[in-house]
Image (cartoon, rainbow, N blue to C red; front, top):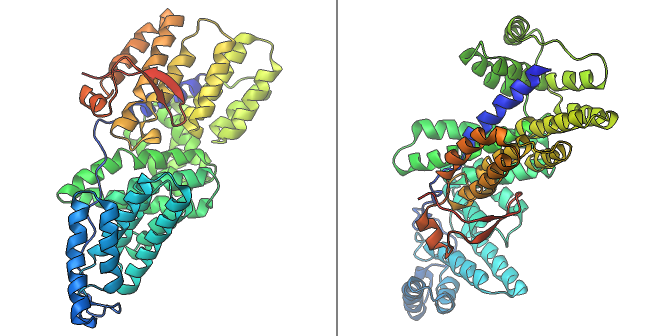
Length: 476
């Protein structure tokens, strides 16, 4: 029995360190090209117009940009329409007016509260993008930027499904490679759609592999600004991909064996690593005759054997966990909790379920629920509150881009929970103080607070899955 607590305890430490929020904002995408060398533009160009219309169109192409400079989008729109309607093909090579049109309509959509008007603006944006594809050859870079804009600038107006499809088009056009500024938003969409069952496990696995290979290639071959972009990606996307290990059948033997055998070779004497690798090989459906599995199994039997519980529900629960059947093990532990009248055992195994949801199934809200249940059966116990604090602290990549303000604010409710843990249970004060000190460094700084018109000491509601009111604090 002892070994499962060792596994879970170490995994929580690893999760907390790997998911710590970073203090740097996500990079933005570069501008799309405004000029193409395509000589076969089929749309009406300046050269197709009468001298009077040609002069009016050329003037309009210049004047609408002046209005955009001063953010006068309604005035810019009137002039932009003249340019766009007269010569959508411009001089045959310039195409920046398409992205300018998208910008104008996007800003107008943000500025109005009229829902129907917003929809019309978005429909027009789609028409502009369709016209762009008619007039010019749209490449992977342009499609990638379109996907980026749909996610970050029009996320409330364009369906998640269409956003996802636009990203996948950009990936297909780029021969299943991704540019750095599309990885994080696409990973977020992929993760959500897999968990919601909106795409199949097979499709999800396909794109997870593309994301992973793109990160590996981009990180090794980047130059200049791209390296900073890939650094930001590495703070978010790998955590989301790893969280998909909690989805039954998502990753196969190749994934688990490659990842966890490498970890075993690095720490061949660690029972935490050995037991985790053993469980993950079974979870991936790996053959028990695999030489790597046999090596791990031998190390487990030699160095990490723990006598199993007597036959019964509890034994079945531990066996299911060891076999990588985490959801089945949760059901059996729940059954044992229902069967026993011992409140000490109820609290112990409810807390164990919370740890499984955190470290293995990757369902943070369920982990919190079971931690709270565990605390009800044992007064003056700080461990459940420490776990909830770690859940919050690990949510930087889940509630934000992994860096920046949205990821940093999770430290506030996390520190609240660490403080609560030591207030109800002095025996955990040392660990709680260590965690408070660690995560206080990741809180937003005074400048971040000031720029958002916030004030230290004021109340703040943290959304995402956390849904907690907390107090604003700064790292400096």
